[in-house]
Length: 366
Image (cartoon, rainbow, N blue to C red; front, side, top):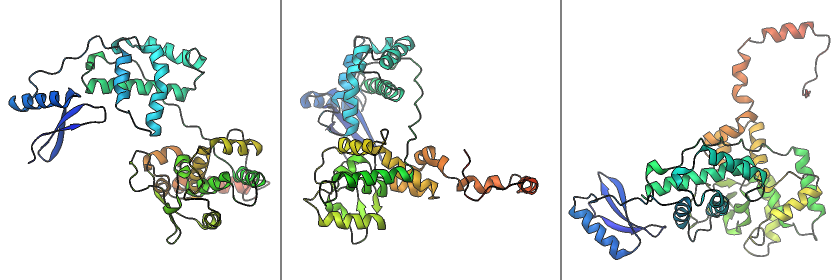
């Protein structure tokens, strides 16, 4: 069995790591200096692998201290999630920075919701943004408890606002055709534009915007017909990057794009596509379509055409439970057989027999 060892975590703090019964365990030394951490390790070993006394919590710590400790663990990270955490800090600190975490109660949180929605703290925020910010407040305080900066009794006490439902905006086929036609019309020359390449890849693979922006030709395996969105050496996150087969429609586009390539990036460079994309969307008369809508559209089309949810989850790189939550409403096949057994068609036969007219197949009722 390996001896206990010291390891420095991303927040700069040294932890004691050891194995017990085939399970890895750790405990913080609360020290960022290696020499001091070694002293803690020696004391821990002399006391039978237990701390002589638990580190004292800071009863005077305010939320600003808690937040700075939480954000420090993200130092150097350029992941979208880390950038998002840093972006919500100014709003939370303006409202709660001077308060001890334990004094953040329902009244303070309710006021924060009103002030954020009205634009009294930053620009007016939507419910989804406010939910995210309060979620990070709770996460930061929970982290402070684990780091023994504050006690569990000093955590904020309030009822978390309910997470808003995701915006269900997806494009109909006609809207997608307008988008493609506009992008082609606005093309500068004969070569496929960045927006056109992005449109084809996004709708045919349901990949996320940033994954496509950074896609290289070495990730596109035309021989076996697969795009490997995860690159060797990339840090794995909750937003998985699956390998997605290349459809027949996309293969033709990629063949042309490869012949016209100007470097190893499929979109020429990795700068954000959002602004040029949204310009094309506005010219097509689609002011509420963003790059993410393409991913949602691709998944919705698959669900409406009877693709099993587990296969949609594989393409998206999401869990089946999440896909079921968002896209099950577009799958008619899953429950069709069940509802057909309710009356075994008896009532519909009676109604059809007595009806003076019958709706044509494929009729849409409004």
